[in-house]
Image: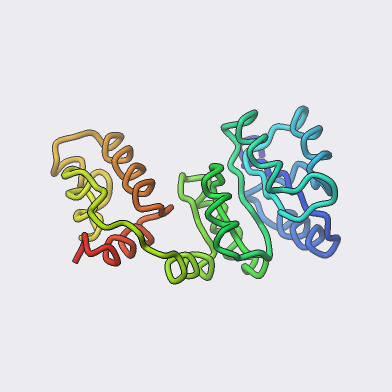
Amino acid sequence: MRNTPRVIVIEDRPVIQQRLADLFAHTKNFTLRALCTSAEDAIERLKETPCDVLIVDLELPGMSGEDLIPQVRQQYPQIKIVVFTVFEDQARIVRLMKTGIDGYLLKDTSDELLLAELQVILLGGAPLSPRVARKILEEEEITVSENPLSKREQEILNFLALGLNYRDIADDLDISPNTVRAHIARIYEKLETTNKIEALNRARQLKILE
């Protein structure tokens, strides 16, 4: 299908290659366009193969996936980049999030959840595997000593805590949904989080949300 999101996978382990090939062969929601075994192979393939989602292993022969990601982000800003790895150390996760990845999923994620998370990413979300998200929240030392949010950002955070959606918040504050979306992106950045649940948890830890 022409409008089906196109996926390129970068993975050197045959068993994971086969798993993903089988997974995408049996779904109508994505089309696997290429399966690359190295970052160098992917660089060449991206020059000629349209791609919506790039699934990247981190440990690859030659150039690592971690080194590849900034290059892809710069050259193909429209592509959604999803790390698919066994590594869950906090420093690496935070470092990669700062490069602009769109998701960080562990390889023990079930096939069903993997497809669901890819759909969320295409809709603008930035999923982390639940264990990864918990690890960051539990292990990251909180150093912020005062509320980093502006008054408007605090208002919007409170509305998020009440369960309001972007449209409801926009109507209540008499601003556009796009403005709300920009404020929320800034909230996530200031709280060093990637989604609503993480932001609310961090805000409670910082005592800026009861």
